[in-house]
Amino acid sequence: MENLVAAGLSLVTVIVQLIQRAVAGDQRAMDRLRRVEDVLIDSPTEKAWAAALELAKKKPLAVPVPPLAPPPLPREARGPIHGIFDDDEG
Amino acid sequence: MRRLLLLPLLFVLGCQSAWTIDTAQVALTTGAEVVQALDEHVAPELTRAAEQADAETQTQEAFLERMAPWQHVVVGLTLTRQSFLVAQRGLDAWRAGSDSQWLSAAACILAGLLELERALPTVHVEVPTEVTHWLGLFRGYAVGACEP
Image (cartoon, rainbow over all chains, first blue to last red; front, side, top):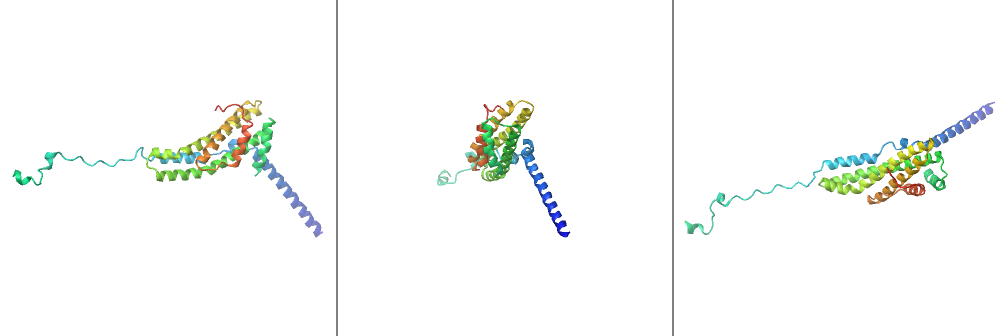
């Protein structure tokens, strides 16, 4: 009697496994027939490109040029020249 | 692996114009899976390249010049994705009785894949074998030029 119950249980287990495989096979077949829009949900590459463009926007259009040195003062504003001729003139 | 086994079969069917709507749907769906996988593979590479370009360039112009090859990849991927979506609508039309849209959509898929085949090596990303297989498939099937 116990053997019969065990055999019955084994048979049920095998049948359940067969049903599970059939269902999984059907699922795979259904997966192959999915519509394109269900596969191409979003594009990580397009998002990465958008992020790259944001990086570009933060950059200056041209390399910043360091400020120029102030122009030399006019000759009169610089005062007398102190040199070898100063004594002659005085 | 399943996709690779499926492709030669689809190729033969496509060349013999013996497509059924279900076979065409399998071809489209499987192709879209390849494109999605490629998209997910390319995205982190692009991000890395952008971060490197950001660190190594000073101006917007230099940055964009450095990223120009990636722009071709993005264009190729976008075109391919859109072509698959259009092809799905073409297939819907076929179900409703007309297969002309489906046939012309294949030309756009081919154009997108060709752009990708050209652009990927310029950014040192290997063209996946599956993309090459799909190029063979749609070369045999595309009709006319892509007119998006």
